[in-house]
Length: 398
Image 1 (cartoon, rainbow, N blue to C red):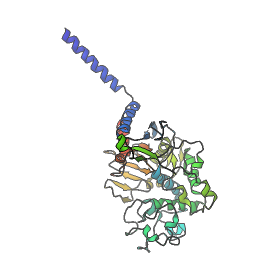
Image 2: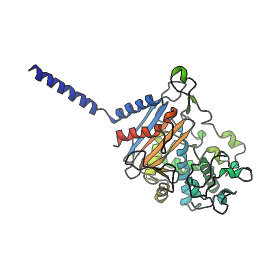
Image 3: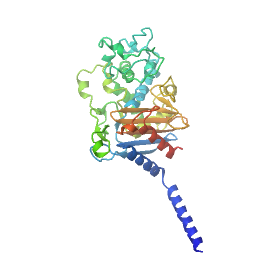
Image 4: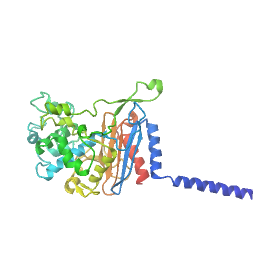
C-alpha cells in the first residue's frame, strides 16, 4: 500500500512538473533563452522583434543601454543600424525607377556628372544595378565618406578605388557604391537625400526613423560600444567603451558648404538610418508583402520592384548565399529556410533583419555591443545575429 501511494505521489509530481513546463509562455521561453545568451556571450544589450503571419507578435529588450550605467535597454529605443540602411536607400531609389526617372541599367557616370569607371575597363559602363549588387568592381580602399575619393578631378589615386576585374562579373561588398547611389537620388529628385527618404519611405509607413538625427527630437539614441579588453587580466571579463560620433548632428555641415548632389555621403546612405527594432520590423513587413504595408494598405513600391530587390544577382563569397539589390539571400541562417534580408555592423553594433516572404515570418535583432567571439562573421552573419534569430525561430515559428 505504501509503495502504491509512493508511486502515485511520484506520478503526480511528474504531472505537476510537466504542466509547469508546458504552461510557460513563449515570451517567458524567449526571455529565458536570450538572457542566457547575453550572460554566456557577454553581450551588452539586445533588442528583438518577431513577425509571424505578417504581424509583429513579439518585441523585447534585454540588457543595458550603456556600459557606463545599469539603465536597461527599452522597447522604442533607437539605434543607428548600419548596413541594413542600404535597403532604405534602394527602396527610395526604386521610387525614381517606378517614375521612369532612372533605370537600373543607367551609366553612373552620366548620373553623377563625373567619370565613374574602372580605369582597367574604360569601355564598360558601371551601372546602377552593379552598385546595388556590389558587383561594380568598386572598393572602399580610399574611404567612402566623400565623393572626392572617387572623382578623377580630385583624387590622383582614384584608380585605387577599383579592383582588377571586369565590372559586373564578381562580388565584393562595397559601402562606397551606396553612398554614390545616395548622391544619384539627390541629383535626380532635386530633394536633399534625408528628406527624400523621409517623404518616400518613412512617412508613408509612419516610422519614427531618419538618416538625420535632427529629425528625431526627443528620441532615445542607444550608445554603441566596442569591446574593451584593458581590464580583462584583472577582472576576467571583457568590458566596453562607447563609440564616439555615432549620432553627430549634420547641422553645421548643412549650414556651411553642403553641395546638393555631391555632399550626400554626409548622411551615410550606406549605413546611417536610425530606427528602433519595432520600427525596423514594420519596415520589414512591407518588404515581406512586396512593397505594401498590409496594416494600412499603403504601397511604398511596386510589387515588381520589390520582387526585383529580392532576386539574386551575384553569388557571394559565402557559398550558401547570393546578393540581390541591397538584400541578401541565405540558406544557412535557419536550417531548411531560405531567408532574405541584411545585416549591419559598425561602431560595435550588430544588427540583422531577415524574413521569409512566402511564409510571412521574420526577425529583427540589434545589439549595442558584444564580445569579439560573438562578433566574428562566418557564412554571412555573426553569432550575435544568427544565434539570437535561431532562438526566436525555435520559440515562435518552429
